[in-house]
Length: 415
Ligand code: REX
Image 1 (cartoon, rainbow, N blue to C red):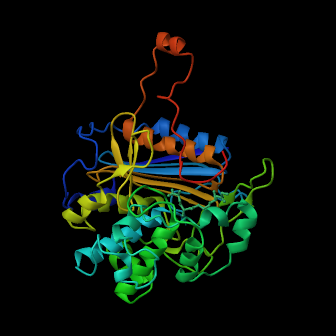
Image 2: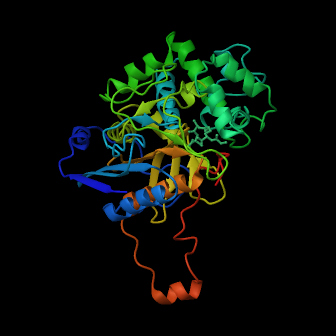
Image 3: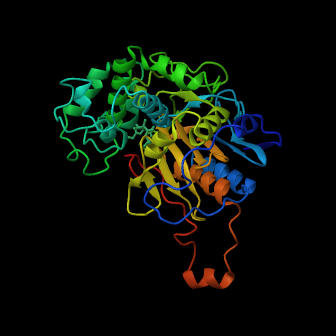
């Protein structure tokens, strides 16, 4: 497959953001050490990660890096297997759980406006919704409510599960009921247990407090102010309008043909995962968020205050926001996304000066997602020094240092 690269030295998007105020302290969360300085991106390393995503089953992949040195747009493979159209950096795709960061920004703006409190019980605003008065708004945003993730059962059989909901339209209440039909996974606040149900309830809070559907809140508070013209929330419409990347879902059985999963309602996720966007818009969004263009310094500090999600001491979660600590010490904030046919990464440095978005048009194939995650290391850590021959022979082969951590430990997909 062919690989095309494009380079643009003038960074219109980045330039427009330079004037913005940088808010909040440079460090947040549990790590005491100051983050290391960030080197120039390793363009060849990003390309290698895209090729690796393709070698691991993605029909195509692309990444866009924006930083002080300009914009790097890198594409590989195809965005449409039927027509053979190449991946296009301007094309739109489903960003999955990166939507959670958009939903969180809206909710935290409502907190800023004094319309709800982070540590208030959810049931204060949605009386009787949850069976435990102790579950707070913060518990939802940190995945510590204990509300079960109903999508695990829904997609236990990947393709039949998907086809059963592809055109279905759920009410929020139906999704909450699905979650509540399962045992809760933790006492409120006690443990991190990733669940889409949390962000369905976040959507309900947004609608209750604004009196409007969530798409209006996204438009008014994020898409319009940041001029995100390729970003939309069209639920329950099943189409991606304009230039689009087609998504291809891997069936559970090896060797079965890929399923074109482009058109779907994503009603099973809604405010937990139904936003559509493009690489440039995602760079603008994460950058603007980190530069303090969307939230007050105090609210951004809340959002970027993190706790670990696993025992690697490299992965953390704040409020609707992940923090990854990379091998060079760089800390990046953003989110990952998985919907049928699409893996997405959208991350920025804490000062918002560098951002990376990456997408591969497949899913249910963790090796492709892990490979795509290699774009983060290349973009924010720069070229890796070649390991010394003696160190290589002493250790035997690739060590944990050179093998990327598997992506999405909290996703029940087959590797
Ligand atoms: C649902 C199943 C995945 C996908 C899911 N996605 O919960 C949310 C999300 C919206 O993006 N979460 C990830 C399907 C973890 C995130 O935060 O990064 N898998 C697929 C299966 C498995 O059907 N049987 O891989 O397409």
